[in-house]
Amino acid sequence: MSRKVRVRFAPSPTGPLHMGGVRTALYNYLFAKKHGGDFVLRIEDTDQGRFVPGAENYIIESLKWCGIDPGEGVGFGNGPHAPYRQSERKEKGIYKQYAQQLIDSGHAYYAFDTTEELEEMRKKLEAAKAKSTSYNAITRQTMKNSLTLSEDDVKQRLGSGEPYVVRIKIPRNEEVRLKDIIRGWVVVNSNELDDKVLYKSDGMPTYHLANIVDDYLMQVTHVIRGEEWLPSAPLHVLLYRYLGWENVMPEFAHLPLLLKPDGNGKLSKRDGDRLGFPVFPLNWTDPASGEVSSGYREKGYFPDAFINMLALLGWHPSGNEEVLSLDQMVQEFSLERVSKSGAKFDPEKTKWFNQQYLRKRTPAELAAAWKPELDLRGVSADAVYVENVCRLLQEKAQFVNEFWALGSYFFTTVISYDDEIIKKRWNDKFKGFFNALAAAYEKIEPFDAVTAENIFKQTCELLGVKTGEVMQLYRIALTGTGGGPALFEITALLGKKTVVERLQKMAER
RNA sequence: GUUCGGUUGGUGUAGUUGGUCAACACGUUUGGUUUUCAUCCAAAAGACCAGGGGUUCGAAUCCCCUACCGAAUACCA
Image (cartoon, rainbow, N blue to C red; front, side):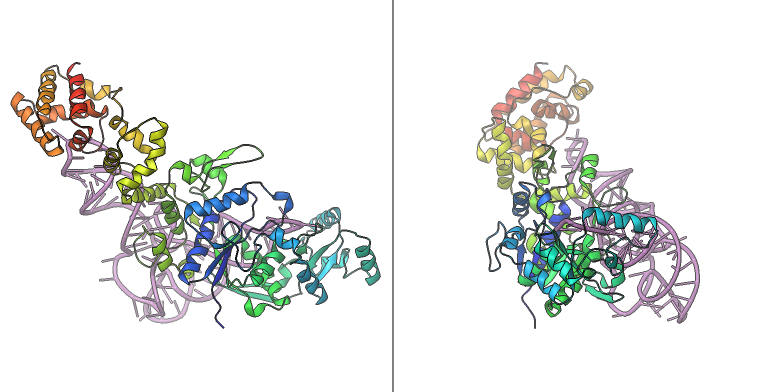
C-alpha cells in the first residue's frame, strides 16, 4: 500500500512569511521532488480575526521568488482537491460533517461555556494551584456541555441558536504515541491533553480539525512542519483515529526551530531589526501601521543563495559540498539528515553564500541584474562594456548593489580623489611622468591591457621612476580610490581616450 | 508550574552497526600572491563532544540522573 508522496505547506495569511516558514516550504518541496511526489500550497485562513490583506499574495510571491513551485494550490494552479483556501472549503460545508461524525461517535461534544465562564474556571484552578488549568476529562464535568447537561437542555440550547463550540473528548489515561521521522517515538499520556475546540462558535473549524480533514481529503502522506506543532501532534493522532483514518495517517516530521544569532530563542522580526538583517524573503509593508520590514530580495540577495543558506540551517547533505543548486539539494535531500536541535541563524555566512553565487553568475547575468540601478542613475553604456565591468567587479563584491560604489568610475568622470594617498605619495616630479605616460599611451594601437602595462613600465624606466612610486597614484588617477580590480584591466576597459584624459588631469596637479 | 523536545570548537554541521590525532564550512589570526583592497594560496588558534554516574577491554555514540535552553499549554495558527 505505497501511496504517492503528497506533502503540503499550509501557512496562515496573518502577516509576511517568516524565513523559517520559507525553510519549511523548501523542505516540503525538496522532499516532494525527491520522491516524485506532489506539493500543495494550502491557505489556512480559518481565523477571520487575524486575516491580513496582502499576506496571502506575499506568501505566493515569496515562494515564486525563491523558485519553490508547489505546482498545486492557491496561486499555483488548481488541482483535483480545489479549493485550497480553508475559508472557501468551509463555505462548501466540508468540515462540519466531520465534527458531527465525531459527536455521533461519542468522541466530541457540544460546549456552551462563555468566554467569561472559561476564564473563571481557569482562575479558580490557578488559585487552587491545580496541576493544569485546561478543559479536560476532569474539569469538563463542572462545565456547561452536552456531557453534563440533560439531553433536552442541549436540544433546546441548540434549537434556540445559543452559541456553542464542539470539543474533542480526550480519553483518560491513555498512551498516545506517534513516530516522528526526525525525532523517533514521542509518547504522551492523554491526561496531559485538553479537550481542544474543534469547531468554533463562529461556524469555523479550528486549525486542528481543518488541518486533519484537509490532509486526509488531499491525501497528504507526510506532514513536514515546524517543531512548535509537536505538542499538538498527539491530538492530531487521536483525531485521525476517531475519524477512522488511522490507516492513512500521514507520517510526521517536525523541523527544528530557527534561532536568533545571539542568545537563545526563536528568530524574530525584532532580532532582524536589532542586528541588521532581514527576517523575511521580500519587503513587507504592514497595511495597518505602514511599517516596512526589509526582505532578502530588496537587500540584494540572490534567491538561490538565500535558499541554499536556508536549506543548510538544520539539514546537511552527506558530502562536504555546501554550495548546492536546487536540483542538487533535491537529489541529496532526506528527512533523516535533518537535525533535531534548533539552528542559530548566521547573517555572515548568508553573505558568504551570496558571494559564492555572485561569482558563479555570468557577466551577462550580472549586467542584467545591475541594469535597473544603472538606468536609475541615467547611465547608458554599451552592453558589452557593462558586461566587462561586471566581469572585473564580480571578484570584488558580495552583492550587485555594491557594484556602483566599487566601479562608478567606469561610467562617470572621477570627481573625488582619495587625498590621503595622494598626500602620501605625490611628488611634483611625477607631473612629467604622467604627461609622458599619456603621450605614450596615445600611440598604442590597439589599446589593450598587456601593451598598456608594458608601456607603463617602459615609461617608468625611461624617466627613472620606480613603478612602486607611481602605481598607487596611477590607480587614483583612473579610479579615484586606492583599491579595485586589476589596474591594467581597468586601463584597457576605460579605453585610450578616457585614460589619457585622466592622466593629464593628474599631471595638472 | 506541567508536558514534550533539544544540548559536538564563536556559528552551521559531519561523525552509518560503540574502536587510531573528533572531520568540513563560515568566522577569527598569521604568512604568501595581488606593489593596495577583495579574491586566491598556505597555515594557526579554537571542542576535554552540557555535567555526573554507569555498561564495556574500549563511548560523542548505549543506560540512568542532574543542569541549562527551547517549544507548547487560546473559540491563533
